[in-house]
Image 1: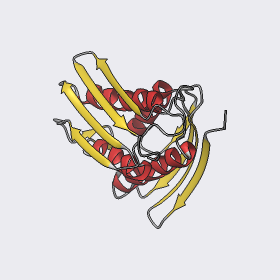
Image 2 (image 1 turned 120 degrees about the vertical axis):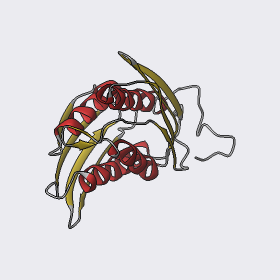
Image 3 (image 1 turned 45 degrees about the vertical axis):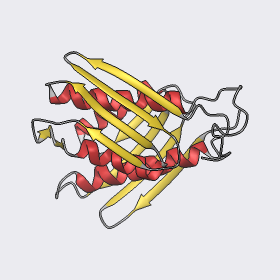
Length: 196
């Protein structure tokens, strides 16, 4: 099988980010963003997605976490797109429901090349640690628009903000794991158009 790995770096006046991604990994990670709760979420996403990620980021956290988290989403999205290459043989679709105590999170995606995000989750606090809860949607928007993913995310029910965020990150990893799987029955691209 062709190696589905990618490495990218991005440097701006606000952030400096380096990421390596292996879609056919084992769930190994080495992640340091400077935002503790975000590190935790990315580790969970990686472990449950069974891909390997090495990520280091330095950002203008003295302002807030926005630039760092959004820019990491941009680079992760670009890494996913690059690692997938021509998308031949992949299942393309992935859906995952993840229960987390009182919370049930749902993520469904299509690696269609058409970027879209439907995000239905209402957090009841502004921060979890130093992480702004509004950045959950911003992160996944950046990933979706840079990877070319049609992405639907929903908290079916939930009360604890930590559990809600964790459920979404885990469900994203699991749905992506399904969508990128190669099925030998698929000849070429999973589309009647012949391209995605």
